[in-house]
Amino acid sequence: MNDCIFCKIVAGEIPADKVYEDEDFLAFLDIHPASCGHTLIIPKKHYRWVWDLPADRQASPNIGAYFEVAQKIARALQKAFDQEAIWSGIKGDEVPHAHVSILPHSKTKGNKKDFAGNAAKIRANLAA
Image (cartoon, rainbow, N blue to C red; front, side):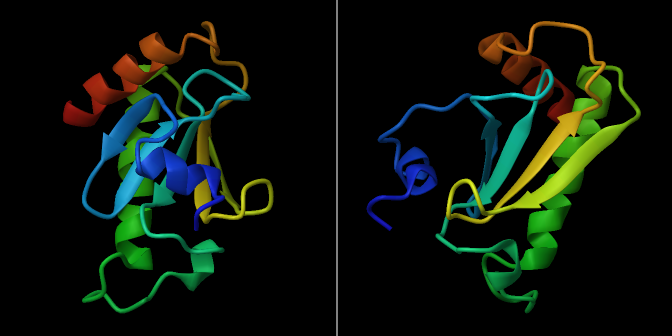
């Protein structure tokens, strides 16, 4: 979609603080974070809603792979921000592109607007 802000991020037309990327999915920090490390995970291909992704594991992307990425990001957030509680939400209303929002508990210490620092913490913990 030409007017979708998330499609523009995927295309590189709009910058984002990326924390994860593979062939099918992209994860980046929310520009209006509710807490440190608030991350959005999107399929690179435009789907209006998360539930529109195919269930077929042979399809690329597919909903199972989507939630495997979400789990990977959630675990990295737990380590990066020393938080057991990670909140998540399935979104699509604010931006008409499927997205999963994952964030550490709101009591996380740190500067939620330190996008570069928070992204680096998450990336470091994806490899750990």
